[in-house]
Length: 371
Ligand code: MG
Image (cartoon, rainbow, N blue to C red; front, top):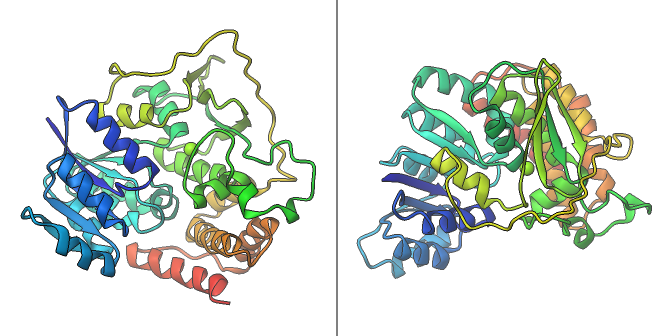
């Protein structure tokens, strides 16, 4: 039986992870659960999966959780709870929280030699170098990607290290065919993703193509290459491809359903599951990206080249700018503009540890958000 600590159990990935465990109860169990503030959903999941180790980020919600938890649950509060749960008695730590807060948990789990099933982009984007060093120090820990694109690459590679380049796919988001003024689009238009149902932040990232930018940086750390391209594939059936040195391109394809990459990360192979079959005829299209209109991925390449604090700055500036957009304080097109300007005016510097990553993140974020 593989024991799972699920960090972020009430979000989209968290709920689908619970569903995967629900369908694989003979192989998987839940040993720890955390959430941000939805104490009722956390308690419900803890009852269903008979899990006694809980973490909750929000202080007010912690009090309510304590009042309602009557089965001898051990409850931790605050961001530190994630680290405690990550170090607990689990084989796999699923990191499905949103934002930088996932970084310490990822490092803690790897230091303990655990497998991290990673759905949190920010920890790898901002702390890629630190995560890599935690991996090599522990010798035992490993990362299994849950992000659909990286799972696709991981499934295709299946351990192979010798390849020419990675080709990520991108749906193109809600504005792929939009001819109007991108500066005038609303929050509602931006969060209406054509294929995936996701949280607001990642939906806006998909609309600006910043999601692909973050995924390029993520892939750089996961697969140890900077040869990473992407194509626009509106059907979201091919989840990514790998080109080998003989010209062969291998792709992973399936209906868009995050439970597939989650299950693959948790079980490590193609185990049976209920799924929607692809019915023929099937028309798949692949377009070159338009980086004039959606320049975010070019910023990611520049950040990879610059190294040091650049990816932290990119990620923090984007988080703050997306928040401003969601609060209707800036235009849609201002998001990537702010990220680009922030990268330009922030001096590049090396980052020495987790504390410095968080300090840099906060400094950049506060400068943009607390205006
Ligand atoms: Mg993705």
